[in-house]
Length: 167
Image 1: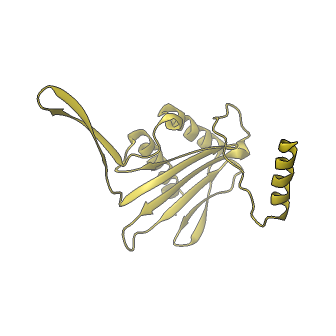
Image 2: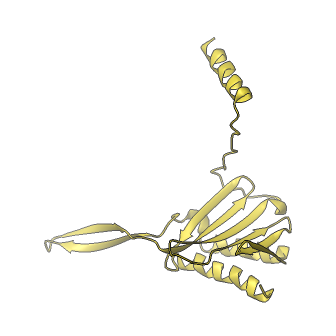
Image 3: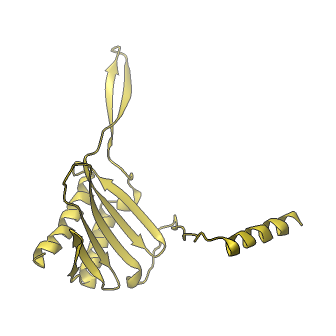
């Protein structure tokens, strides 16, 4: 009876609430997904004043574009290119690595007998956020000082798509 009352209360709250519930992302990386459910995004992030920011969106539905200074330029990204980029992400273990690289760890010798790990969180002035979404699964990480290197190289490859199209 308590469970039914709780369920009824939740349903009433949803029906009469003005809040829209966001669909949560799945924590499970899918092994099969429709091409139209693939999305790769790159966003520049900076705390510097007057820094130029941009965003690149590559979509499996064919609607890919580059945004800079509030202007959207279409990008022609083939299915083969998108699949190649996904394989690049798998090759560098993108889906398994840490989400941020502004935490630096270093081992130091303490009192000539003990090794200890020192952890420092470094301030970030510039980074790039990279997200890959496959169906309802989404993984994002921030690239700081070109780290992780493999993902940074994939971002450079994606940015070269803009240069090829003359944007």
